[in-house]
Image (cartoon, rainbow, N blue to C red; front, side, top):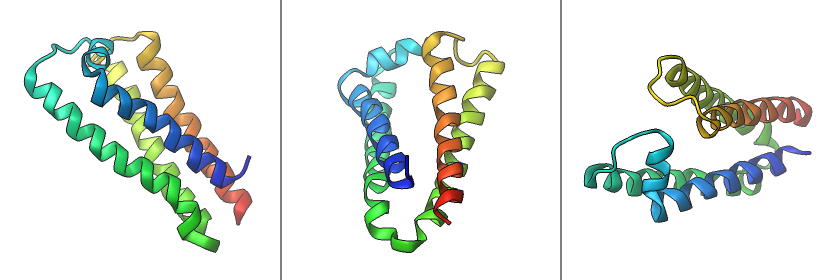
Length: 124
């Protein structure tokens, strides 16, 4: 696996979340035991758009970065690790229910962080 593949896999993973936020927001909110309200539904649309912009960047960075892809990979890996830390923090404080969806989502963030780090080191 190379760094381009990791960027593209992360974009596809985010794409699944984007579809959920736009077309099934109540399903996403139910995973976290949040009450479905019009305000949260609207916020999910905006979060989906923000994630769509990040997914697009993940998809295009390998084409734009040239020889600097490992630098982008390191920074991206740091942010994936931070998302994992936030997920673990919310699980530890019972802000989200400790179910398969929330735990696996947290683990996937750390897996992507590790993949970005290892493949960025290899690309150097």
